[in-house]
Image 1 (cartoon, rainbow, N blue to C red):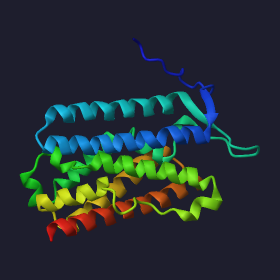
Image 2 (cartoon, rainbow, N blue to C red):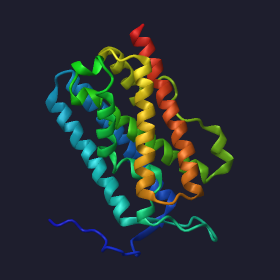
Image 3 (tube, rainbow, N blue to C red):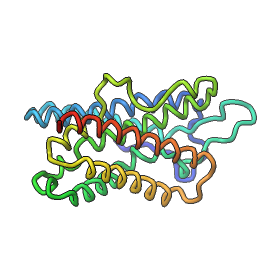
Image 4 (tube, rainbow, N blue to C red):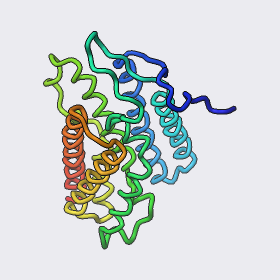
Length: 239
């Protein structure tokens, strides 16, 4: 069956409330992130069949996200609100997941330079939980977009989980400790990830507007939170 997409240049894509788009994208980001994390656990345990099934769930999540991005655009929430960005001017949260592969390729290339630990592990291990980390960051950005539309609630939330639930970043830190990466190398990985995402997005985005600068600020907070979670688990496991 051929894939149906809006014609090139079609501005009459389905217009739905911005909050509905947010409510669809956020759980998809969580599904993608957790399925990838569970798939990596399954494959580490030697259960390749279960890992393949989980990656099918992840891939279906990516496909649904692509369909949302391709076929829907947000309507202004209220009279006088700024129009939603055009499809070619997507927000950072909506850039990260579709651009996952080039971001992960740069992550892997940098991780390969973290000798001597990197010399003993393969490509899959070098990308350890990276896809889930990206999905979690994108979901955090989208959640922030939704809270930012409701100023009375925006100061009641901080990035990150509740401290008890395992996170992709925490699992990454534990995996890096097991593989022999130092804390300094893991900090460098996050610094390289930050630089890769910003460089690739700004190149694709072109001129940045006020909303984009807000996205960058929130993205930096999410990266810092991810790093803190990774260091915490790395320290616990290395100790």
